Length: 418
Image (cartoon, rainbow, N blue to C red):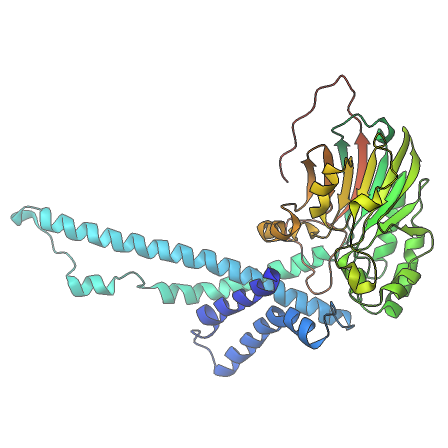
């Protein structure tokens, strides 16, 4: 729910601090207010008026416009906070300087005293003197900066993700995983906003890596399944010697999950609280998967890592697929070697990390150590059409190569949080 209120808080601040005090025509104030309110309140409209669906089907330009407006609002809000903090500190400095001059005048010898501001003059140089005038001049500059950043960030959010190669050194001696190459695709969010040829470019880049295994960690598509069928069919280009496996994300359950499951190519196997044993380059290992915590909406069972790992020998290394990373601590207690997750989009905007970390167990993006478990949280390949912007958090195709620690080699310290 916190994500619902952040844009509304930004709208209220911008409305009260910038739009209402602005010396512009009343009609212009109304238009600016509407332009800020639409993206700020869209998630409430989706939840209350559209029966909880992520977004109705609409032309791509509608998604792009809303994404730019929302991103612009957030940037303008952030820049306004910085501006107001700077102006406030400058006003305080001027006030303190005037007070020091007044004291210096009182302490000087009678013959050396200089003219100093009287009380009325000090009032004129008060704390907020010039604050409103300077603020109004900066508003125009900040608006242009916010619009520019919004356009650039939305464009980058819709771009084809780059390949991000990561070597994951395992905490235990898991020889069966040594040298295993896995491509993780998370949060594809195929929608009306997906550019033509985007998925084909993604699958081409995946296949160029020649992975042993391909995994999809949820949130494949948004919108009516009938409109996504052609896009989902493009996933048939994904092939790997050990197979292609998937788990559900929360977006799978926003519409017709049974129809979506049927639309996904048969070569992709879904794992729902179950596991399979695969023969990797170094030996046999288990691949397990759990559904998203919203699974009940689609008639699936709730996520149960213990059930997913039932029957897996304790000495066999296991990789767990979970859309949400917060399952990592329970997975670590169950002896899982690796967990691959997504859902967070890496925060999308680098300064949004703390907001994302809270509901996701403190995990945002990159590689983490949770006891003996290695957790990788993908920043995602794309993002849902309601907010499609990236700012210093690029999309990614994660290519993970596992390295088993030799029994006689010392344990490495946990890597710092990304």
